[in-house]
Image 1: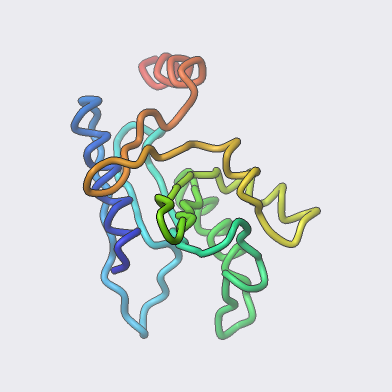
Image 2: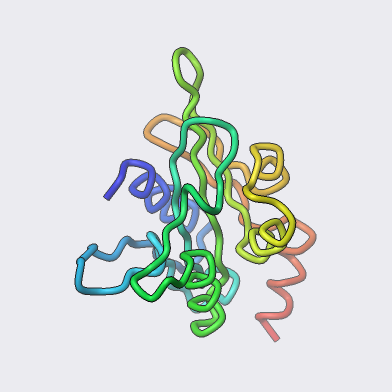
Length: 165
């Protein structure tokens, strides 16, 4: 498991604990004989937090669909495999990207919804740092990252009302 994947798992589990929400993030053990669609899964009875998260840690300011994602043995692109997985399972998909800062600069990380990834893929060869800044910032903290909120407050309260009915 990469450090960034571990940071994401800790970040999400800390979020559930501090927000007093039921949910649990975890990383499945990798095996060359089993298909692994994403890096981190989140289970929750609250559909807002039933998630599938792919993690990437890169140097630079852009993640490219051809360079940073792979194709499986059947030539299915990783982007399409994850989209299919989220649609079949009902999980909300996110791409978590850590932009490594280099000398003297701290790393920055963001979450972007998988539906937004699919929109960007229609017209661009990759996702820029600027695109990620429109997503959900993970605040840098000692020991990793902190998720302040997964959804904008307006949407979060609307979704909570819908799930309580």
